[in-house]
Length: 481
Image (cartoon, rainbow, N blue to C red; front, side, top):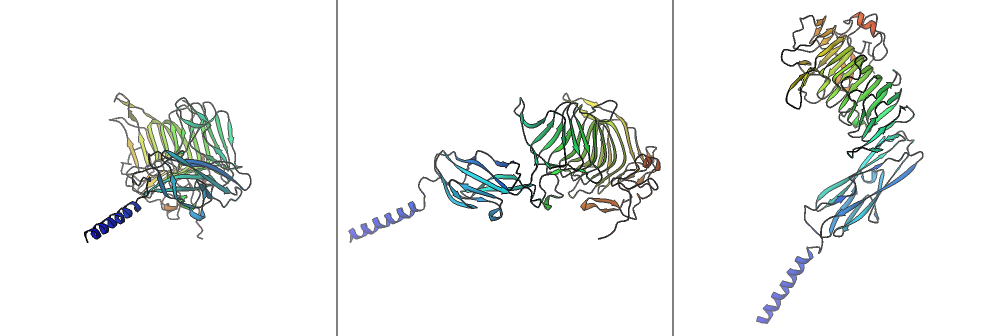
């Protein structure tokens, strides 16, 4: 009897041991903190296709641990609708399960994309990702391909600090033949002119920017019929009004003689950054007939610069529509600043500043040589949309001539000439960036004819000389659909 009990006990011990060992896959590290590493965090398919074609890229997946790991699944996030195809360690599919990687070893993942670049219904940029599920943790590698023919501006130069960017070293023209896609930083070298022809389309990938160095020049030559467009490279309808999709156009210190005519600049971080004087006589920037909209920080950010503007609409920006700092000289005629940004904004649309603190903690004052706004609107959903941030008892010589302002300042001084204060301009639809005037707007017929004579046609080419309205857009009866 005792021998029977010992045999039963032994059998139970064997059974329990079997169950325990069957619950563990020998040699596989089950630690939830295990992470994979990759030879690239994103794959860029930047081949310019001329016919229906495909391109293949690859990356390596590393197991840097001392035990074998099992990847539960490797999956294309876009599933069967993805433009991409993958092969994981010799196995193909939109989902590949139970992929083992030996200790301190790696596997290859090959990715292919096929597009028809002349199909204009395709998005300009095609994106997806490959997701790796290991021990209930998700890691991914981004996939980016170009769905249409384009001119790709990607890094071709590495400076002494290891910074990669695309360097334009000779006078260059960007045309309307194909869109341009800027990936990373595009830098116009010292003394070089970049000229952009009417109808050109410039698309910026995430965080990409266009930068002009000393003595370089930017000439944007759009027309009313074919404006030049600067925006992100995501063209799906979801991204139509998404700010912050790219960086900025930066006209750096001592760059010069910039002219922008008939442009649309939208959905970035800073539309135009104008950094100090490029010339003591000519404006650093002359901007005309241009819309800047939906920037996360500012539409126009100028530092101690000289800027003139006509028929410019700067609308719906996250912090400032126009930020004029460190003094400077500014003349604007028929400007519409209208800020109804969808998120809460605690900053004025138009801010002037004349000082900064240097590296030694000393305050440096930079005076304004001139501030003039004629026949212009500055309005938004904040109670104060015009603010002067001036140091101590310093003053600024400014003039608002026949303007419509939302402000709590004292407008009973000679600096305000026939100014309308806190009267809603009654724009057509602020949420879809339609800042045409409706028929009851107080801005109608309220402009200075002398100012209108200098800028006889509005942003869209309407003649304003007979009865000038305030703002960039002359009132025209709107026909409802």
